[in-house]
Length: 249
Image 1 (tube, rainbow, N blue to C red):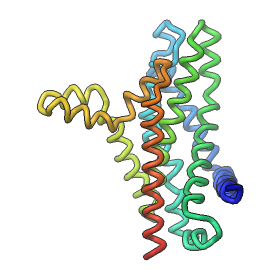
Image 2 (image 1 turned 90 degrees about the vertical axis):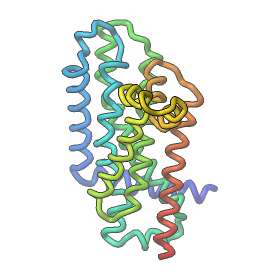
Image 3 (image 1 turned 90 degrees about the horizontal axis):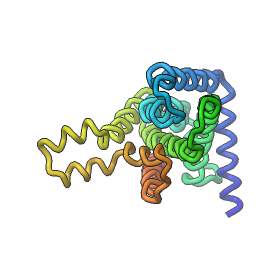
Image 4 (image 1 turned 135 degrees about the horizontal axis):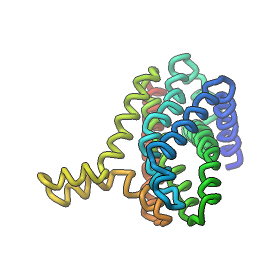
């Protein structure tokens, strides 16, 4: 067990160092923070709302913001290994495929967590201007981190499918877009007009939106935690199947 953790930690450090070895990580963080600020204060109507809360002006934009930024951050994870020909070398090392997958995923998730944590001035602004519900803000951040993890896990799987990072990016955006639209209220309202209610509810069950909304309201429900954990686990399992096929090819 200690050997497994050591291998995962080695892969994690390797990937995380790789992010900051080039200006890409810093550019990503700057863009993420600028877009967060723009959506919160300009489009989100932060000051016009007249209430000390982050649910609507801040967290509401995260499913859409992550739709492009998370695939951009994760598209290189396996695609780059395949492009430069180091995937075969990595898989022949004394590291299991699962250890490599988990290490890479956790490294990218930690990078996204850092970018999210750097939005703390927004939370400070809310506390300075009013008396917000700190618990709701914390759960909102937790939900946002889980949402980013779900998108990232999907991107990890699409990155293993191809050596082309652009194709990986497009595939992950399409899949994550479905995960938004499936339970987005305007879409479900349209579907109920011509589809059975049970079918609509089944489709909506694949959406991240209702589960993320619970965290925005300050509610930590086991079913929501299970949903995000399931998306992450299923996507990483799919990645292992893809890599196993590549190793056997």
